[in-house]
Image 1 (cartoon, rainbow, N blue to C red):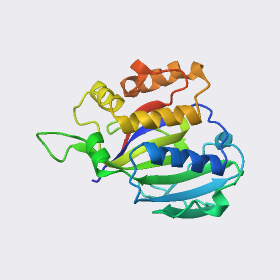
Image 2: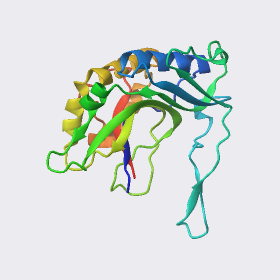
Image 3: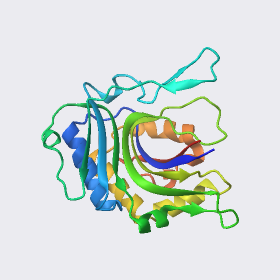
Image 4: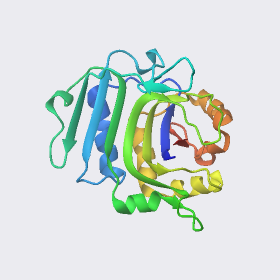
Length: 238
């Protein structure tokens, strides 16, 4: 089985309104400060129309057969898909686009090798155990963090997430607090935290205790959480 995981910063609770241009501005700020290679491309899938939280429909919903054992992803109808970077400017239709974002899947870019090296975590005794992030992404979609061994019930805690993503997984014996210490000291992660907070500060402090109760030790920045911050947590899939 191949594992894919993310170190996520997510906006808890009801998300802010966001235009397509604001989303691209946000991505460019992250790209400039959070360790993305200048040689990598931005890829964007976008669906506009109404509030992000008008429903919790996922872009990766699955249709299951009658047995409940075999499923396939439902096709999602995006408004458009774009690529740019490597010296190319943002597409013209995204430079002054005031359409409200409903769903989006965006790879901001590939991480620089030295950033991937800084963020990785590998077991000295078993090289197959670890987390090797290589991409920075933005997802506007129901965010339901889950780790291997959890039950099948998904708890959706937000609708916007910035992720450092790649192969591997977290839950191979390292205490969650060790991850918190490692990533709180990482400048690319700290830069992403500053940018998320400055562009879209969390304005509902009342939800943070609920998030802490839901995530427990996986609320990685709970000990140094400040007003307006997004929440840092791991998410795994296999």
